[in-house]
Image (cartoon, rainbow, N blue to C red; front, side, top):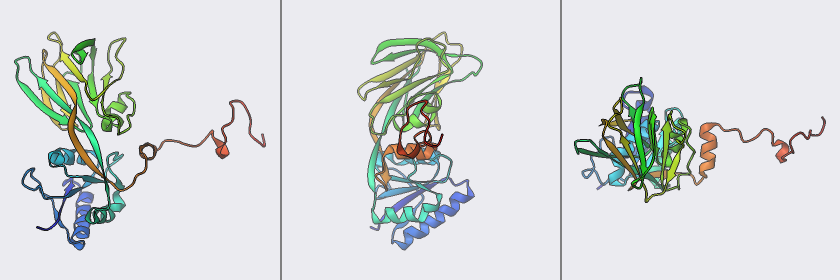
Length: 291
């Protein structure tokens, strides 16, 4: 059986379709069968996936392939592209690196989500970046009770709650005022959104702990749980959401061993020079030479 590499792309963008053809040609030149269809358990011989697009496409590919353990190599054709390894001019190079096996594997943690309705009905899912509890009615607050490991912690009204992995800490949770977690941090981050409470700060728990969020029965609005910005699960008053660090992993193909700090600086265009002139740190109020 020949070697196969999956190409995952957004079919609704012309630039993405052109990139698919570039990747396909590079893989064929290397003797690799390039495929664009995947079904877990059927196409298990696929050895890797080349993902062409932004973070949304990477998240789609992760949900498509996690259970098969297929490593993902992302080429950013979107905006920030935090999950991608390369930029749009590197499509052929990315295909060649996958074909030659010249990459390392980095595993990323995920979050397991269980939504329990007041009727007892249960829906489950998982997310790589985040699971977000959002209010259905934007004119009123969602009233929730928060517990950690089954122990009550706080109650408040809010616009919503983001529970993120370390991978997702640079996405929605970051926009909500949460901290950045380095990818090797195993645990979950909770960030309340516009909470009406004195104690509603971001929280971080370890891999053995669980967040439980109850929508109180008297909440004036229902809500829904959104997994990685795509799948939505209804959440009515009286419903409960349990979130725990998952044993499931998403495998990312990495071409460089550059530290996460460099990626953070590059993607967010962070200033790293300025008041540190000529490599020397001057004390506040001390003028430099020539002043």
